[in-house]
Length: 477
Image 1: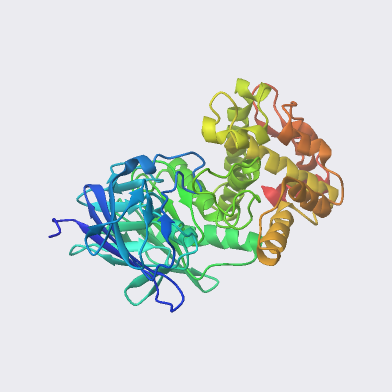
Image 2: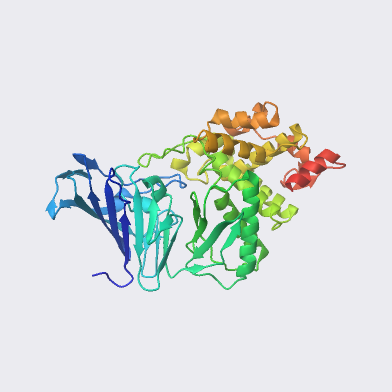
């Protein structure tokens, strides 16, 4: 019998005559998940089950395997021979195990008597990553479930475990903000409860943010998009057609708070382009056991910070001075770190698995990355008389590597795309990504008629800017 507030999830695999059928039944109770997997149509002698050790979007190992207990496998109640999580597998069998669900964190699994935030990377074991999976959610009275997965009838469907792991669920007494469309595509914002704030104004602003983000690339690659709001906390994780975020709606009448929220939401949204589709080549296929290290998180994360600032500004939600102040905050965070003397951007990207995303004793690609993005955009605009920009680079990467080649880009290919758009070599600028050389900001800021005030990092306008400098300035700010 299911206890009160226990959540039952049945994961059913779409039936194909040539494929295995996998059926998960996942029962959630406070701080514990019980998993039952029924496999039918197996044609291998043994199956080695694995639990991921990380979740894409959060570039550190998470102890998901250590949270598993009471693993067993049986055929019609007879225990099957096994070695760890590798079992002697008959045609039909059942697997069971428990998962501890007490980590209230955007990248983990958490269940209490009121809600469930389900990162399936920490729940569902896999043997073949290509196995199709369907998901039926049976909730207590009054509960509902939200996810980015497509639905047919009562079933959420995933064609493989990559999509399953990319589709977290939020369950509980959910509250939905008004849905809206951008270019005819529906967008949803679902949470566990919001503060008393102007929902209509917020959704209108979100529509502006997403419209600006879409206009940068010129294409919407999903059929629907969902913001999954887990409420209090920090951070967010991006997915192909959803994102898990922390938002309460509190203090939205405060301009500084509102700008911070909008920048955060713009960042997580733009990630569905920059990292999920426009991605370093190392970030796919995913190695769920060992992780995927890359030197290009300064592009995947740092340029997303650059675009969060611009998207919010170009949506009319921040002033030019507020946008420049955001860049100043990044500049101060980077320049006041002694780690800049010994760690480059590419090193910070590579070493984030050990040091964390905010740099440890080194630097953060969240700080220096958007600065390089700004200088790169300025250089491209100056070299092309403002006919091209970093937007053209992002569109070019999207078209060539995501749409045409169906893969990520290499370090060399990223630089080549930038140089092709600029019509010039950019070695002088790219040295700031792979070395610790002091950045000559004023060389590039001058292209927009700007300079840095010594000692304060304040952005100032130079005397008597040329018409082209003014044009470039107004194109960005």
